[in-house]
Structures are given as structure tokens and as C-alpha cells.
Amino acid sequence: MSRPTRAVIDLQALRHNYQLAQSLAPESKTIPMVKANAYGHGAVKVSQSLEDIAPAFGVACIEEALELRDAGIKQPILLLEGAFEASELKVAATKGFWVMVENHQQKEAIINADLPAPLTVWLGVDTGMHRLGFQPEDVAEVYRSLNSSRNIRQPIVFTSHFACADDLDSEATSTQIDTFKACAPVTALQSLANSAAILAWPKARREWQRPGYMLYGNSPFAVAQENADLLKPVMSFESAVISLRTIAAGESVGYTANWTAQRDSTIATITVGYGDGYPRNAPNSTPVLINGIRCPLVGRVSMDMITVDVTELTEVAIGDKAVLWGPDLPVNEVASYCDTIGYELLTRMPGRVMRVYL
Image (cartoon, rainbow, N blue to C red; front, side):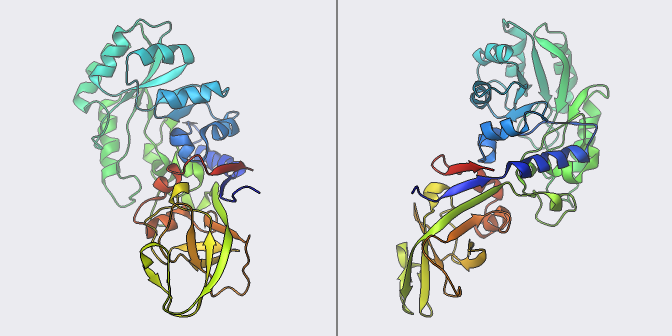
């Protein structure tokens, strides 16, 4: 029998979340973000599951796009960070990749390239996040330059990205929307809404929307939100009990002996660790579901194992199911114990964790 650590991926939940995004902006086109191995869920399988309803896909770089093409995905694929080298532009033109243009070097590379076919480009605007994109005062001239190039396929899509859309009380998102409106042509195709904006900022919905985190069934908000509450978690990170022991009060568990039993305790060892993407900095008391019941993590997370206090369980045995996060234990909650975010826990899950698709 193989090691029981696995990520179970519910593809019906994935499609539900995509359709929720589409229903919130029915006049828009919804492009799933499948970068970073589809947030740890498996980019090829996720894209194949959505290819009959998604008009395009979004990735970070050309390597991720080529993986999808090699797997038979035929839709356009948007390179969210654009081309890193001029040589990538010919590949993009040949393979039907869309290219983000966010700085003058990328713009000039496209205009001066010898391409076999024109490119569809997305023109990035820095509306306040100050990470990527042209400054608003430069957008008109950049647009004119691109618009007159034989290497550009019309229409050009104007886009930007929000810094604080997950904060429902912040004024930053409204400010960014206003900045974008002031420099993007009214008649141009536009894309603003990420997951948080799709769910909670109707004024950000445009011709194209870009769901990422919500696609995988997790809320980008720290508080309840009516649309986010309809999401269905896609991943259940599971393992099993591989050993049980009783220790006396005063004995410690794991590396550095950072947890000491205050009573005689039953300790379950679970075959999962930081080598599987479970956070090493998870503190004592982080919840783990054993047979559906919350039990506290005790002792340091090691590379391949964790230990859990199951003293309160009336029944527990080797082979019993353990859930690290999933529909009944949100990844956001686990992340909050670890002073991080669910995005990180999902995307850093390594390849050795088997993905099982339902």
C-alpha cells in the first residue's frame, strides 16, 4: 500500500466555483487563473476540467503555458508577466499565447520583433499597487505605439490589478477603479476583477474577469461575505494515522521537546510533514481532523510526520483518516494559526503529494 498522504481534488466543486464567478458577471468572460500549478491543484487536470466552458486560461510564464499546450489545451493562454526574453515572443505568436505588456522594454520588444503572426496583448496599467504596469500618464502614448504596430492583433485589452480588494472597508479599490477609468479608453476591452473584486466589487467587473483563489473554493476575505460563502472548497489534504502511543504526564513529543503532556495522553503520528507542504511553523493546537473530529497538533512538525493529541477520542486506530485542511477545516483557518495565508499553503504543496481527482 502506498503512503496515504494525498490531495483529493473535487472537480465538480471547481466547476461550481467557476460558474459562480460567471454568474456574478454574466456579461463578462471568465478566464481561470491556473498559474503555480493551479494553486497546487494540478494545472493540467484543472484546465482539462474547465476547457469546455473557459474561453482562455491565465498563467505566470511561458513554461506554464507550454505545459498546458503539450497537454492538449487549445484555448488562448495569457502570460500574466509577459515575455521575459524577446525569443519568447515568437513562441507566443506560434502557440497562440496572449502576452501582458507592462513596461517599455516589453513594448519595444514586441514592436521590433519579427513574428510569424500578430500577438494579442494585454496592456497593464499601474493604478496603485506599484508592482507591474505603465504609469497612467504614459498609457495613451503606449497604446498609440502598440496600436500602430503590425505585430499587434486587435483589440488590445486594458488591465490592472488590485492591492486591497480583499479589504471590504478599504477605499483603495475605489481609488484604483477611478484611476483606471481615467486612462483606459471607454471603448476598449478591459479586465480588472480578481477573485475579491468578482465577489464583492461590482464596479470592477469588466469584459474579462480573472478568478484565482475563489476558483479553488476559498474566500479571499477575513470576514463572511455573501458570495464567498457560496464557494465550495476543491482540495481536501488528507493522510492517515500510522502509529499510536500513550505517554505519561511530563513527557514530551517531537523535536526540541516543545510540547509536554500535562496528563497521560494518547498521541497519534500522522504521515505528513513540511516535505508535503504542511507548514513547519504550525504551532501546538493547530487543528487536525481525525475521523472528522478536531484534535490539536502537538510537537514540532517534521519533514514527513506530525503528532496529534487524540486523548479525547473514544476510538482511534492505525489507518484512521486525518484531514489537514478541506471542506470541514478551511485552509484559511489553518493558515491563520501559522501566520500566513491559504494561498501559500496551497501553492507550495510539492509534487510528491499524490493528487486524486474526483
